[in-house]
Image (cartoon, rainbow, N blue to C red; front, side, top):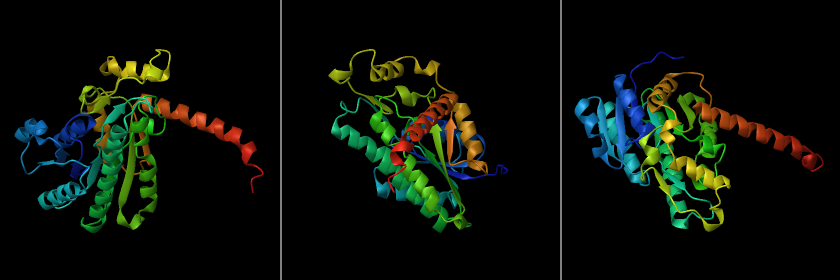
Length: 285
C-alpha cells in the first residue's frame, strides 16, 4: 500500500450520500477537495468550516459537458492538478421495466451513464495532459446491482457503468499512470436513499402489485427502515479514502458485506449457466 500523502480530489454528486461522506472525510484528512453538486448551498456548513485554500465548491450538473470541463478547469486553476476523481453523481428510478416512463428511463441514463462517461473522459484527459507529473485515480461509483441486477431498479442497474469502465481501464497506456477502480456499494444508511432527489419512486405497474412478486418485495425494502440495515457511510468513506491511495487494488471493489454476498451469488449463478451452456457451444465451429 502506498503511503498516504496530500492529494487533490474532485467529487461529483457531493450533496448527500457517499458523495457527501467522502468530501467530509477527505477534508478531515487534510486533503484538498473540489466538491461539485447541482445545489452548492447544500455544503454551506463545510464552506464555513474549511478554508478556501482547501475546499472549492462548484455548481455542476453532469448532463452538461461544458459544465464538466469548466469544473475541472476551475479545480486545476485553484489547486494546480486533480489527483483523484470520485465519479459519483447519479440517482435511481424505482419502477418495473414495464412501468418506467420512457422520459424517466432516458433521464436516468443522461445522468448516470452519459454524465459519468463525460466525467470519466475529462478525468483521463486531465490526468494525462494537464497533471505534471502525469497520473491520477478514477473512482467509478457503480453498484452491486451493476453485476447483480434487482427487480424494480432495472434501468438504474443498466446504468451502473460496468462495461464502459472496464473497457476504459483496458484502453489506458500504463505509462500515463492512471488507475481506474470500480466501486460497487451495497446499501448504506444515507439521506440519498430517502430523498426524492436521490430515488424517484413510481407507482407499481398493475401487473406487478402482488406482494409475492420480487418487484413488490424490492419496493417494500426501500419503503421500510433502510437505515436500520444499511452500512455506515462514514466507514465507507474511510475505506474509499484508503483505496484511493492504495496500490494493487483490483478493478472491482465491492463495498459492504451485502455487496460481497450479492456478487458471490451472481458469480455462482453465472458459473452454473456457463457450465450448462457448454453443450450448446461445443460443435459451433
